[in-house]
Image 1 (cartoon, chains in turn cyan, blue):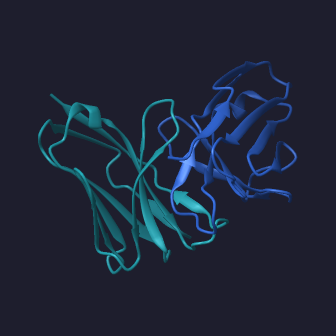
Image 2 (cartoon, chains in turn brown, red):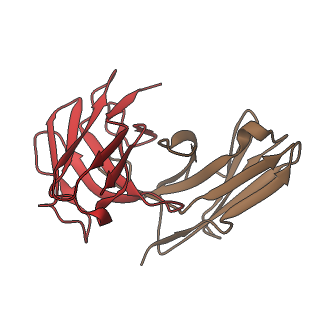
Image 3 (cartoon, chains in turn red, orange):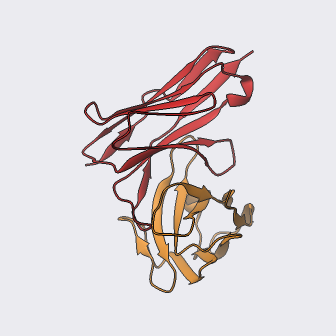
Length: 114
Length: 117
């Protein structure tokens, strides 16, 4: 069956360091992969999308890589700040139509300590 | 960015009552909306895909008679939890994609915390 795994349930790092989160998937051929941020008691907020034919995407302090051979995506936050503390979700979808389902990983709870 | 409004944000109800949750796309038309539920410290689990003007498509294991979905217009979808029980207590979130044919980038409502006593 299809499976999405975010290896670390929780990650705690020092302010200023780079946070790296991992998303692995099996039995799936995604058209693209997305990363979302979720704060407690709130809905997720879209951060970045990377397509199957892209290797890397950047947005300000965020960087996402996508390796379809390894079936893995890495999500990096450079120069991390306490305000980056949140749960980060990866999500996969197999198609581009508006009706294609988007499946979420279980999330990694990131804590940035001052 | 596109805004999805969901309300109520919190509901406390007695067992056996029905609860309706509304999800509106405020500045775009959403032909497709998705309903998720999320238990504490777990990920979002897709419950159903709501298509405007047609019946919703439910995921395996989700009771369609218990979770009634109505997508009557391009900007409104509702989820009604019928005869709610304590095990239905959860965080319910709706989402929608912006206009067009692609599902790139979901926009989420702020969620509804349902507590059934």
